[in-house]
Amino acid sequence: RNVAVGLTAIVFLLAGLAYVTASIIIPAAAQELERECLELDPELWRDYLAQLEPGQTMAQRPDLMQELGIKLQPLLDAKIARMDAGEEEVEVVATLSTTATAEAAASPPQPTATIVDVV
Image (cartoon, rainbow, N blue to C red; front, side):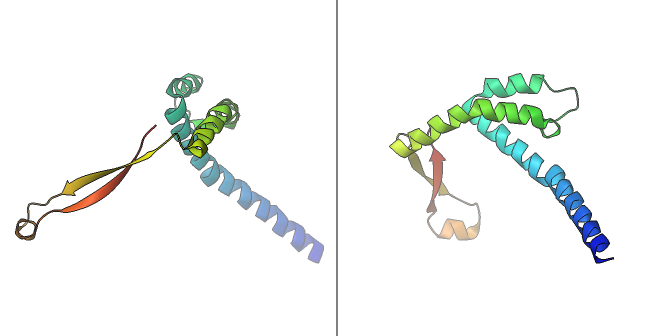
C-alpha cells in the first residue's frame, strides 16, 4: 500500500514538474532567447519567426528554440569575451527630472542618473 502511495506521489510530482516547465520555464526561456537574439542578430530572429506556423509562438516550438540557441552561442561567447576585455563600456547619462508642481518650482531640479549600455 505504501508503495502505491509513493508511486502515485511520484506520478503527480512529475506531472506538476511538466506543467511548470511547459507553462512557466519554456515561455520565459523563449522571451530571453528573443531578447538576446534581437540584440545580437535581429535578422536571425526574423528568419526563425518565418519558420513558425501562423498563430504559433517560439515557446510552442522547443526544437526551433534549441536550434536558435545553438546558433546564438558563438555570438554570446563573443559578447562575453568583449565584456571581459572591457570593450563594452557603461555610460552614465545625467538627466534632470522636473515636475510642474509648486514644490518643484520652489526647489531646484535634482539630477538623476540613467545607465545606458553602449554596444
